[in-house]
Length: 307
Ligand code: CUA
Image (cartoon, rainbow, N blue to C red; front, top):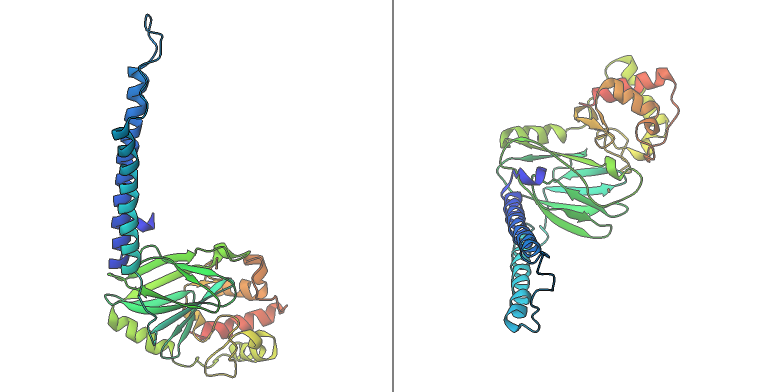
C-alpha cells in the first residue's frame, strides 16, 4: 500500500483524501450493518407473534432522507476529487520541461533538458517540484509512482504534464498502469530522489559522452556494437550510434536494473541479457543477435565500461 506512504505534498493530499473516504465508507458500512442486524433481531419471528410487522408506505420524510444523504455524500466526495485532481496536476503544459518521459513497449525513455538520456530510472532533486512531460511512444502507457503523486497517461501524439516532487531522498518505485501488451508487467519505474548537490553532480556526469573502451575485449565489443545490429536501435553519445528505438546506453553500466526492472544490472546478468534477452523477458522487442560466447564476453566488457 504505497499510496499510504506519501513522500511528497501531492501524494500526501491524495493519501489524506483516500483515508477520509475510507473512514467515511467504514462509518456507512457500520451503520448499514447495524441497521440490518437490528432489524433481523427486532422483527424476527417469535412464538406467538408470527404475523409480519407493521408496514409503512410512502413515508415522505424517510424517502427524502435516504435520497438526500447518499446524494450529499457522493457530492462531497465528487467536490474533493475534482479539487485534488486540479491541485495535483499542472493546469498547463510547462513550456520547457526539465524532464521528458516517454512510455515505450516495454520501457521508459527519460530525457533531460541538458541532453542526457536514461531509461527506466528518473533522477530528481529533493524538495523541489519538477514539471515533467509524459509522452507515448507507441501505444498508451501510464506513469504511476504512488508515493510521489497521481497517475498520468502516456498517450501517443499527445503531451501530458506531471509534477514530480519528493520530500526526502530515496528510491521510489512505480510501474506502467495501463495494459500495453505482453510485457506490460515489466515496465517498472525507479524515481531516485537525491539531495540537490548530488542530483546536479549526477546530471552533469550523465550528460558526458560515453567512456572510451580501454581493454582489448572492450574495444572488440565496441566494434561489434557497430558491426552488428545494435547500432540500429541504440544510441551511445560520443560515438556514431544515435538511434532512439531502444534505450540510450551511454551510461548503461550506472543503472540499477536491466529490461525495465526485470533483473539487476550485474555483469553476469548483462551477459545473459545480450546472449538472449527473450530468455529473460519473453516478447521484448530487442532481437537475439546470436553472438558467440566470446562476442558476448567482449560486448559485456564494452558495455560495463559505460558507467
Ligand atoms: Cu506500458 Cu503497460
